[in-house]
Image (cartoon, rainbow, N blue to C red; front, top):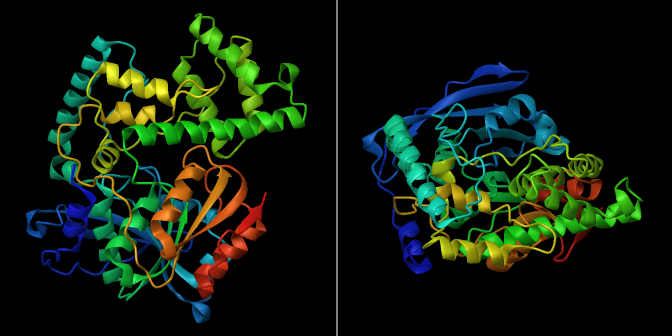
Length: 444
């Protein structure tokens, strides 16, 4: 893995000159939405080696007279479609965003309509034996080779650093000197890296539920475990305070009982599926639905779970190096990441997905070095099961004067639109560059 200093040097080397992308030919693709395909280099270090079609969409500013400029929405996942967000999920944007900006989004390379690369990830990522560890590596590598053969060179260049170059190409063809950017979840990594590489091209940037790309294997697993346990703690407190329908109003005892049934073969759900089921209901969050799910499990019924979506394999594995030497090391990692209630960290999915990755990580982890004129705005829930509050604090420290954290004192993943306070603060920042005071907290 490259050191942070070497990586910083690489990111400051002038890019290889490439032919300017052909301006997009917009066409209607939904109510008030236009779509186009932009042909971009597969490998930005060798622009003449081939191109792929990046599908993008835009929703023109609702009030042209009050238009500020372009707001690029970087979708999460990795695997979410920005085009779909504009076509079918305009409600995720605030009224001011829709009124004052041309909102432009895209399907990142390898996703949706931008040369999709579906490749199987393990259904149950937990490995329980040395033989299983060896077999997982063999299975992963066999699947990856088939996918590499099927999808070609783009497989090796599907990473967030390349997506940053794609975003800047979008900026260029739109004729914008600067852009505003709203990154959500995994899309915040694109925002972070864009601000690092092109600070002068950033007008404003909202990072909603941000990814901490400085975490190594142990730190990633441990922080993911903490985030899920913290969100479960918030649910358990709600359960007690509201006298929820679980026996004794005790969510911890209910989960422990479900785990025993799983271990004893009395419940057709694995321990990992229990973790995934809790994780899925805490995303929104939907506490009553989680009560129903725990009630089903206690009765021996599998219930309906919302498992975390499988990440786009080459993106997550090119963005994060997760070296695990052997099964003994794997066991130690999982043991250290276990929490008082939940046996597994949600990060186990990423570790298992990338186990045995055969090529150098193209976008390795590093601490951010961002120096923008306007500070970036981080927005994070206090209790976020996916991108925990500790990540937001870590990123805030890395950004220093180039970042400000707005805390939503509630629960869930994604918090810009959570309350009138978060909306007003985020909108004021995007529209007038009003940066909130450090330490600002919006009540739940």
